[in-house]
Length: 93
Length: 221
Image 1: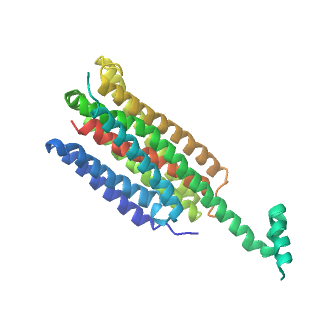
Image 2 (image 1 turned 120 degrees about the horizontal axis):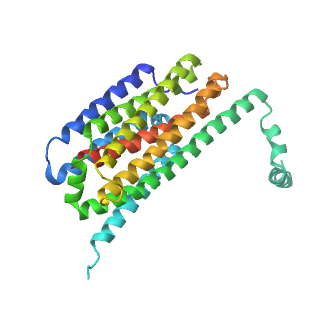
Image 3 (image 1 turned 45 degrees about the vertical axis):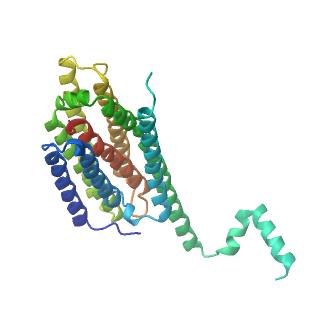
C-alpha cells in the first residue's frame, strides 16, 4: 500500500497549521483597510491547501482525483464571481 | 489470427464481458489484488465527488456573505466585533487538532496498529463534542443578549453558516462513532481500511470549512 508519510511529518504539519492560526488571529489585530479580507482569505487558503495536500493525502493522489478536487473550486469561483458582479452592475431604479 | 477471428472475439467480449476476463488474466491472486485496489480508489474518488457537493452547499452561503458584506460593511463590522474571538480561536485549535488525530488514525490502520486507531478516533470524537459544547455556549450567550438569526443580515448569515457547519460536526461524530464501533468489532485492518480513510476525508472537510468561516465571521471586522 502507498505510504502517506510518517507520524512525525503529520505532527510537523499540525505545528505548521497552529503557526498559521496564530498568523490568522495576529493579522486581524491590525487594520489593513481594504486588504483585511484578502489577507484573511490568503492565510485561510494556505491552511486549507496544507490540510488538503497532507492530511487528506491529495499529494499522493492521481490526476483524476486532482480534477475532482479542483473542479468544484472553479464552480465556486463562477458562483461567487458572477453573483457579485451581477449584484453590483445592476441599474438601481 | 484472421480478421474474422478478431471480429468474433471483440463481439464476444462485448456480449459476454465476464467470460472474457479469465482468458485475459488467469492469475487468481493478482486478479483479486487488482479488484481491491480498484474498489479502494473508486470509493475514494466517490468521496471527493461528495465533498464537491458539500463545498458548493457552503458556496451559496459564502456568495451571500460576499454580497451583503460589500453592501453593508458597517453592519458586518459591528456584528463581527460582537462575536467571541477567544471561543472561536479555541474551536479552531480543537478542530485542527482533531484533523491531526484522524490523519494519524488513517496512518495507524494502514500499519495494523488497532489500539492507536481506537485512541485517535476517541480523541477526535471528544474534540468534536467539545466544539459542540463551545458552540452551545456561544449560541445561548447570543440568545440571552436578544440576538437571533433575524436580528440582522450578518447574524442571519452567521447562524446559517455556523449552524449548517454544526450539522456537519454532528454527522461527522456519528460517522466516526460507527467507524470506532466497527474497529472494536475487528472489522478493519491494513488490508481493509477504505471506510476509515473516507470517514477521515469527511472530517477534514468539516475542518476546511471552519478554516474559512472563522476569519470571515469572527476576525474580519
